Amino acid sequence: MPPPYFKTSAHLLVCQHTNCRARGSDLLYKALWNALDTSRLAYYKTGGSVRLTESGCLGACSYGPVMCVYRRQDSGLEEGWYAVTDLPLAMRVAQAAHDGKELPTDRKYGP
Ligand code: FES
Image (tube, rainbow, N blue to C red; front, top):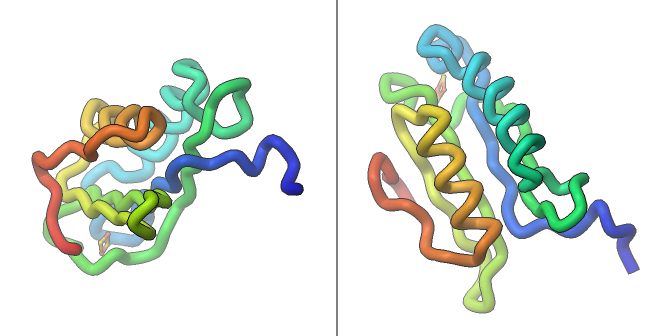
């Protein structure tokens, strides 16, 4: 049985490659970690379940900051890709993933 800190409902990845960093993805990444921590959504908080990781280029460089989310559903692995991501959008995605609700559709693209 995995330890409790392996409880994950979703994994967020925020691109930290050149073009997204020029559009503020480094600040987004730090602010998102702070927000996940204070809102207790972060996986290491009691009741939290969201992981966050830096990523390399996600292939939509002109539309950064780019973020993607993966979560396991009964139907399989669901993914959502977001362009021009800001902190409010990232937190809505995190909250929806945590709550098991439908992911936000604004600025969502791809698969
Ligand atoms: S640099 Fe972020 S998607 Fe390419």
